[in-house]
Length: 260
Image (cartoon, rainbow, N blue to C red; front, side):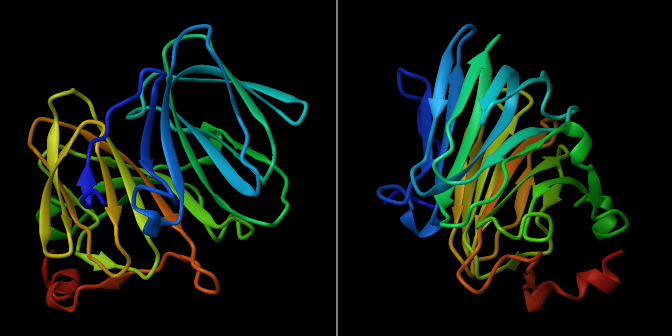
């Protein structure tokens, strides 16, 4: 098995596998892939027995599903909010790219049937957290696309974080019983940072993934001069969904009241 943080390559057909239930970190309980599409390329997605979300990270595409069609354009994932199509098991999605495009595909088993939902930039807020704490060194912007509160029929959560240069996020160190995956991008290809998973530290690079084992703390840091973005994806557990669950490390709780 690969380590907690790694950076897999894209295949010749433009596919990067982040985690999978059969081979790469099956303990994450999800299949997550990133797809690069060229202008004019058409790609079809369908998951037998699985719910699926397709997040437009960057590009210009037309989504077609269940007799509907929506064009989505996102030039800058730092300054533009996401488009994300979430569908139930067995539903086919056709994606046609009108320019170079990066899509993230997230899937897991879900026997429930639900109505597909296209989340647009108007559906997602930019929520700033950490202001006024830790000398202003752990301020981040969180975009929750959907979670247990808004999509209780789903078996996972999908969102984004904007991380400022030289700052920390997911701070203070905390953990939860559910597995979580981060997919990182930077504003420049040489950008870098650090991920702390439990007692281990790893270098983050553009395109890297962090597979966070349940129960392990996972704060992040970003190098000065570079902006970091990451998609965060949590798999609910049977009878124990992630409902903004957060168990702070007792050694650092004092910072919440005295670290201002």
